[in-house]
Image (cartoon, rainbow, N blue to C red):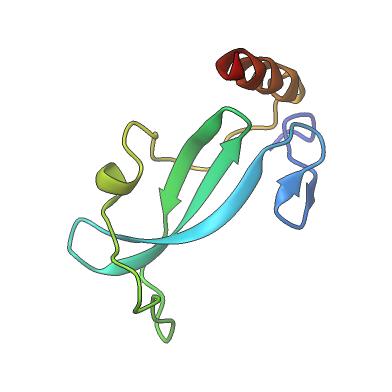
Length: 100
């Protein structure tokens, strides 16, 4: 990956573009509980990537797990989006416009 498009992660946030990542549990197409990475910015969830099942790691039992389309409707499935420094300004403007 080009270093111009690579994120500069500190904990779970990119200091360049403001993108954040988090882990969540979903149900895959076969019905197995799998962890997924979700990338989000000020305008909302941008992309989700379900991971293969992990051996030895169980999902939380107190929560009802949903499939990706149920839990994240309209969010594209795919790998981490590239770093876009101008995205931070666009997302902040969009969030401000939504508040009005």
